[in-house]
Image (cartoon, rainbow, N blue to C red; front, side, top):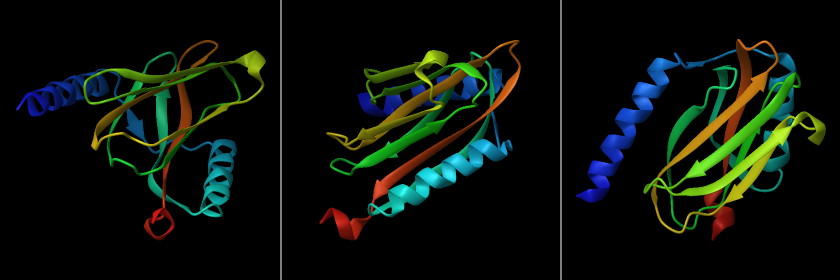
Length: 156
């Protein structure tokens, strides 16, 4: 029962946050799309398949929350590609109890505009990804989030 209540509260908070920032899916940035497609191609060659994939229209410095059902023991690769104009790109992962499992931040000096994070959940649950980026002058910026999972036939 506690898990259900936590999930419902989390879902409401995510919905309120998403509506407040008017999160949009479906932006277009050719460079980001090409880079994202290359990562998907590379992971497919390693026995992975796309679980979730979206181009995200984001507001500079605003967190973009995404809730995902992930399965215990399943290998996932999270690939977040931001704009090459971003001065900061961040990725955070939370479990169903709102415990932060990972936090990665890239700055301009790091010389890359993507974050790749491998994850194998210890339990099946709804996990929360929070991604974002900062561009000079603020405004909208495009990003891509892809979640790859190991093919079932490769996992056994």
